[in-house]
Image (cartoon, rainbow, N blue to C red; front, side, top):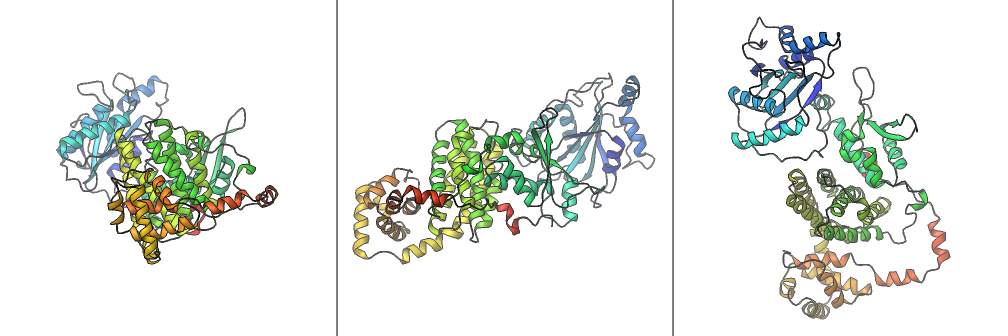
Amino acid sequence: MVPDVSTGSDSRGLIVYLFGPGRRDEHTDPHIVAAWDMAGAPDPGRDPAATYSQLAKRLDHHVDLRTRELGGKKPAQHVWHCPVRTAPGDRYLTDAEWAEVARRIVHATGIAPEDDDKACRWIAVRHADDHIHLMATTVRADGRRPRTHHDGQRAQAECRKIEAEFGLRRLKSGDLTAPRTPTGAERAKAERQGQTVTARQWLREQAYAVAAAVHNEADYFTVLQSLGIKVKPRLGPETGDVIGYSLAAPGDTNAAGEPVWYGGSKLAPDLSINRLRERLPDQKVADHPQYVADPVDPWRHTVTAVHAARTVLDSGEDAAAQGHLAAFGDALYNIASATTGPHRAELRAAAMAFNRARRSATRADHQAAAALRKAAKELAYASSEPGGLAIALLFATLQVARAAAKWHEQRGHAQQAAAAEEALRHLQAGYRQAAPPALADLARRAPRAATVSRYEQDVRAALPAHADRILTDPTWTALTTTLAHAETAGHNPRCLLAEVGTQRELDSAEHPAEVLNWRITAQPNRRTQAARSRSTISGTSAMSATPHPPATPAATRPEERSRHR
């Protein structure tokens, strides 16, 4: 059951909407199911003699008295509105049940406490099976305003109790860090335009994708504008510095033909200018990665950083963990952007789902996650996707998403835990698409029997407690090919197995050879590293002077920016 509190100043206009046909003739049989006084509330839905103006006048009675006391000036935002909707699949509620829901919510929010004869006037209108609209005028009979501080949070808490008592679907409790949901008008507008998402949702995803790839605030706004998104900075009155910003989607206008603006913090709490600056320090262009000696380096660096994030989530340091969750959210966008296979859609969906899991009431230590964020941003500059290493990175994200869900669950972050689980399901789907062909190719290229036998001895010597499970794992043959590649790259197979075998507890792994395979795949080529160390400083300087093209976030790809064309 979902309440959505808002305020306004036009009581008659809201009444006209509640009892009217709706924007798409979706309102059927609108009528009052509960009110401050059922006998004294004219019901235009059931009484042919009742008019909208009569009902508005009765509701505005205390407001009008107060207005005369104020010399003709109505109190600001005196109309309180709260739709309450059951979840999809919930049972049908009768009018009597909806009336009880209404009375409990106006009591919980402070609009009309029980047995308070001075309370605000209110009505509950039903015009559909799955929801009602609560409307109140927020001036009490004694002329005071009601105590509605945190009314949205209190309405949510009461709905959780109602769900349990009424046998409805139990929704997850929030912590005030969720982004604003699109309004009914925004959803209707998107439907009329044939869009699958609202302008608010589209802007939010573009902003997240761009913030994940760029290195500073200036680049953030520049890339957004390159997508056709209008940017309106808000400047401080004295200093002229940017203290906020708003975005408007291409082609999204109001009735007057003006852009519809959404403030950064209204898109999501961590897209406010202050939260962005915590993640986007004002770096100079010279600080950006200008030259990558090996195109696989960004992928390998990100694998290493993602594994480190898993360790931090298990450490108990909440501020550092929260910082890594935010950086991991950015990493998912850049991984999806750099991926070219058919599983890219699942990675993109995982990034979008994880947005709710990337923030909580815990203040993030973003500096603690600087390595993960820097490594992930390198992927925006990667020119190629190394198959095996890309899948090793995808495999590593599974572990972090699973750990994120556990971390949130342990701290009572129900919505975030659910979001992390959803992201995990998308990552698993992407992995199931990408990994089998790669593992089959590795198995097809397995070394000769004598080499395999030697690797078996290495496994028994390095990981005796897990050797039997590793050697009977269906992916063991693929692992032998990966061990051969690692040996060619300068690694001692036995030492390498011992090293990667301690990085993760193998007892809980369903396929331990698969875990080892992707761990070993991410190891650097030692012979290449040695060759680099012998390169001259002058040669490196010359190459690093070559300018690098700007980052390419997922949002800048043609298929990602068709929302408002």
